[in-house]
Length: 331
Ligand code: GLV
Ligand code: GLV
Image (cartoon, rainbow, N blue to C red; front, side, top):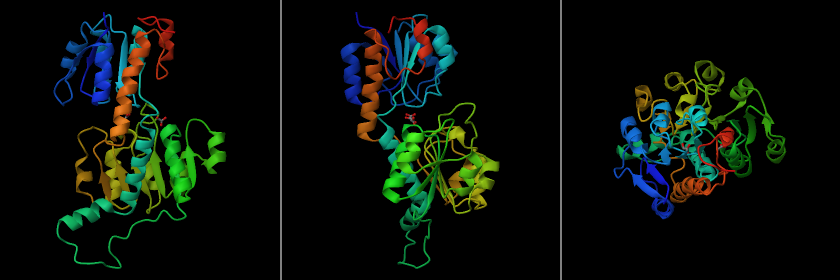
């Protein structure tokens, strides 16, 4: 008998096909986020759950099925899963790191350049029929030449953004993280600095930290005051890392030059003031959205399940502590 899996929303077809090969699958046939009630109902009688970053997998969901053994999250971020409660119940939790690193780093750079060069504003201008010819003072933006990039969070994605900036654009790299990475400093001539120095000295600030209580509102009113008036902020991590109201105000008062955002504090709701501003590029959480990356995330999310149900602890296990008392035997 195949293990029973509940899938909260369809993921790319190669991953669904692999899932059907190994598991007895029940999935949400509509292209929408399920309600908490529907997820609770869905996990009843299942061995595992394959879910998305838009699903809140809290104690209520984890309590719904005493035999639930695993949560495979289709995302690198796993702030949507109550990992502590899962570990307590002996439920394995996995994510999908690595396969979206390049896509996300590319998109951080897309937003960086789009915000610096006012692409959103310029495009709206063209579409409104306002383009009457080239002008020496039209749409002047910020340059990457001799610029400094400040990176918060030097995980896989932060490093790939740094590589693009250092090797492609010859930018100077500053970074701040909970730990220093000497190899990285050597490879990119990057400098580890405190938060305040990074904010004061960077022309571009890009966020690549996971969301947790320590990074909630990492960037707020106080931080915007430290940044250069010519600075550009890029957020492809998680919305609540930035105080969105404070950001809207900083952009309105031109205390920073621009921002490029892929994530929001209360997704899919966006702070109203931001929607009216020209100096912010707004994307709908698509940093990992390439055909390759989303397919590979799906295959990895499914392979994490396949490994575990074959008794092998998946590489992407985020709660190693669970192995001591997990509901299924994995080593
Ligand atoms: C996307 O935001 C992810 O965490 O995979
Ligand atoms: C995620 O993959 C990260 O470590 O940045």
